[in-house]
Amino acid sequence: MEQSRNLAQLVALLLGLLGCLGALARDSEFQHHRYEDMVRAMFAVQNECPYITRIYSIGRSVEGRHLYVLEFSDNPGIHEALEPEFKYVGNMHGNEVLGRELLIQLCAFLCQEYRAGNHRIQQLIHDTRIHILPSMNPDGYEVAARQVRLTRGPEFNGYLVGRGNAREMDLNRNFPDLNALMYYYEKTSGRNHHLPLPDNWEQQVEPETMAVIKWMQNYNFVLSANLHGGAVVANYPFDKSRDPRIRGRVTSAASPDDKIFKKLAKAYSYAHSWMHEGWNCGDYFEEGITNGASWYSLSKGMQDFNYLSTNCFEITLELSCDKFPPESALPREWLGNREALVSYIEQVHHGIKGMVYDENNNPIGNAEVAVSGINHDVTSGPEGDYYRLLLPGTYTVTATAPGYHPSTSTVTVGPAEAIQLHFYLKSAPKHNLNTKHHHSKKNLSSTKVPTRLGPR
Image 1 (cartoon, rainbow, N blue to C red):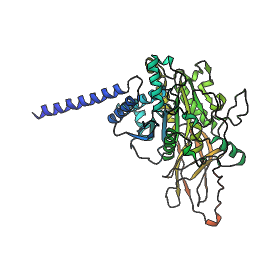
Image 2 (cartoon, rainbow, N blue to C red):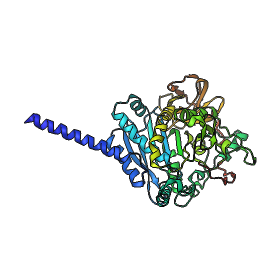
Image 3 (cartoon, one colour):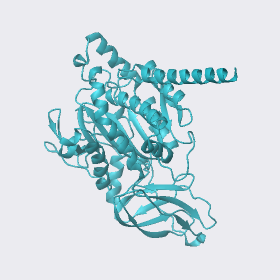
């Protein structure tokens, strides 16, 4: 009798497990997910992998839809010191939908591979806190999806239908313009990081943009990518030209971290099945990458805002010639992007990272970490940990904080895991402190938003 009862319990358990796997497979299969379908798929993943996932909302769209994020971590909901934060953002333009579908697939893939014992995926989730926002613009998506249904096929969808949010605002032209301030500071030796926002910035942005900015402010993201469509190329900062008056020719706008951004873009393009070949959608981009401004100048974009307002390095991934590809194309697109999506997350573990302590081993938050020769500093998070993406090489690194003597170290970075470099700052007498001059929050006039509405 006891053996029969145990056998029955085992069978019930296996049937329940198969049922969960079946639900996960159905909700993440290759199809276009409307809002309710997307939410159902995300919760199916969370239900299947409850110990390594968490779902949370960063806010609501104009029409009240939640902007849901699915987090992967060995300790969901908790920031662990020296464990970097990573994010993917999809569907910023509502009618550019491949990124949305790829991120839904990625969520299911990470869960399934973790459960299957895939060591690479298990290590990635144990060592990284991964945040995935499949749709930043769910309202625009619904407009685009309705248009596709009415026209009986994505090939008839208008190039701009559903691009903006419910107010028809382009969210990738909606962030505070910090490039103009940065370019001014470059000439006046002003701040090179965490630039101040205009005093009235909250009145100037859409609810979706506001939610993402608050999200960035609440999490110390290190690396990010936002997924678009309409071309096939990995695009890196700066998006906005330093000299917008030049017409008839394009000029690159390199950031202080131009070399590492090129490396990050290539990490995706070469792991992608065909992006690195360069010829796609009638365009040619050498090695499948481009500087944003050398393609065309864009103001108030999200990737530049990440770099200039936070510690986060972000690139923009253009992933398909068709903005709303047919469902039959989704399996091929997933196979073409799967390795690249995982490889790009792994890039967050390069360079240096460490803790900034005082002389009593108390962590110091908001300490500035500067690398000699690269005019862009990062700051430590509230727990005192910092992260600095760097190419292999030898660097001189200095940590500073108000009320402490600076500390400088030399470190050699290799091609593998990030090198740990900790700083211990000694208190300085008050009369010896050098107070840094911080520029006022002057809202410099920005250039006019370009009339071209390209994929970004």
